[in-house]
Length: 381
Image (cartoon, rainbow, N blue to C red):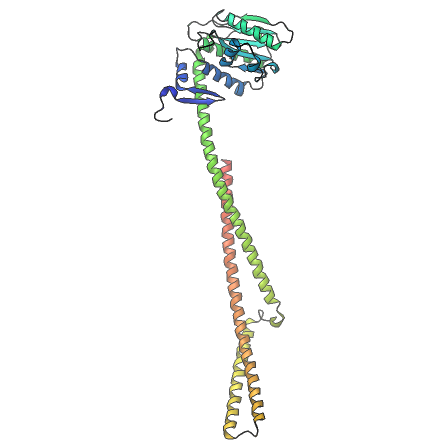
């Protein structure tokens, strides 16, 4: 409610097109007449919550007033499916003025198609008889099935004051609908009791409060559902991200396996992984031996060069070519050793990375499982 909203405009409840304000609710404290809003609200409740399976047309007080005062009933009764129903219940008053609202008394008119009878139930016997007969005649012409419909002014409990006519109407309405639900003839209907009348105001007030609480609960539930949907969306996104991460990790693991398989199947290094320490040690020793042999031979050649001159340049060129080839072979051996060491580092790094990715993947899976478990628990609640 806005702070500037006056109390007479305070909305209490909106139910199936019926809006109740605070002054409407205060009428139930008595001794006051019940207005058309309260009567229409109770008819809405019975039609939608209690007797929704009955073949009954519920005509609210404001529509009944239009049926009384306007000649064309099709405009009002066709949308209600009047001709397809076996019964109709109408709350009418004694106002005949087409220009202003009013009236001093409520009564109940019931149309029974199976019995071809209109039952008028009035807590002030005969007070609304003329209005009821006029309306019954118009409805009989509207139905137009060549039947003669009787009008029966039903004897009922008489009110003892001038303000409980609306309460009597609601009690009589309960009585009629309960007999229709049991397939009983309305001509055999029993009268209501004064105890039922005395409790009706409190029952109606409690009903309004119950529906108000239910509506508030629905609003809170909708808000909670909106929050849950938002959390579920976030959880779904997180799960999808975890799934994508898991796919990426799996693909990365497959790539690492392919690389390692290629290393295992390398024909030139078939024993590289199975004899890593031995091969590495042998290559280092071979490299050192070749280097030492080369150094000794080169120093021998240089000493011979200094001690004596070569007979011709061709011999010197042959010697240099021989030494260059040996140097290249030694350098190749050293390069092979370095390559092996580089491969070992790559393998170590790949294994470490794979182990790290595996740990991350397991962590993400555990996290997604926790999120799914939390969502299941919320769904159960």
